Image (cartoon, rainbow, N blue to C red; front, side):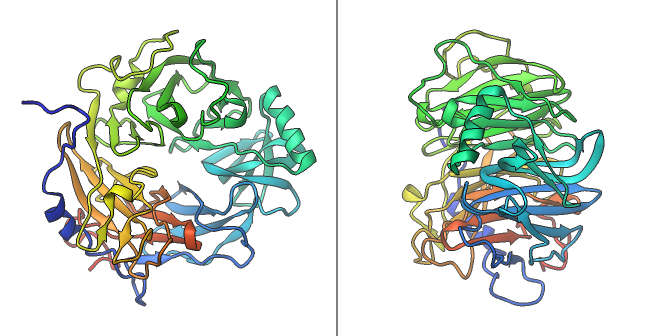
Length: 449
């Protein structure tokens, strides 16, 4: 009998977990450690590891690590193109309160290439809101160039008030991982969402059918993701207070069309991520709810018709659109799955370099070796529908109580595969995990013997 799509579809969790911890416990050794802690800059007083971003350009990969939302800055790290990253920050002037007034956002946009005033800029991050000559979304590039992106009129009114009164509001952001991405921005305080088409500085607002938004619920847009499906972009906006995920699609160059709403599961939309999970070379959507994680085929989402319906369910999805659903797994070194906050963060990364991605899930309240809320990162291999398998778990050997590892996640791309970086903001840490038990023998490099 075929199981319900929301039933756990993996088996043998404990057996697999035992083999998945091999390279998770060595952040406290010297030499080519499989796990590295990025050094927290002394200038970042208010948090570290609260937010993450990553991009790759011409084989060079960077990671941006942010601090407290609205009150701190972010630090840039150069991971290079191999196994020798710099653990010392390259630049700490991202939304740091220097020459430009800036409030850090809870999530970043990343541009391998960006365009400002007709000039191409390399390796840029959209980090928050502020004033760089004029008010808008603050962009900072690797050449230290900073410039603003204009925001819609209603958002500008609140931003000007925010700057005048020094009262920050969060503007979560997300981009796809193409070289010239679409940037999606939300303003939960005003239940607004808009995007910037590829290579454009002009915002395009998203509109929802009547009855979709609840003015009393400010969780709209607290999570978001951008999927690349050929020339189409699917824009996913989480509404976790209503247990919903709203969807739009665009050609990436002009307007957008509302294509529906997913709902019906408690806490749906708590975290979102986009990436190539199966082998069709288009992005898929990863969504967490209160207890499970679901993977939805991006090609199926892109075929959804334009609608004015306010209904939120999974019933409109084509057959086979759900690639997998799974819950928390533990190992001999980790426990407290039921209270682990499994799904607080999700990401997709091709950890073994085979062309399809694995689903990476944060469980920041998981107990590790008796340390409560030390946190862990769980990896799932989702090859086909009903074939989601718990593959391995990552944690710190130096784990401390309340680290909350896995509160945020990113998957930097290095030498033909992805690695994992996880924030542990409880004690101001960010950890880089190089190794995976999914890698073929001999393919892992010097850090993974």
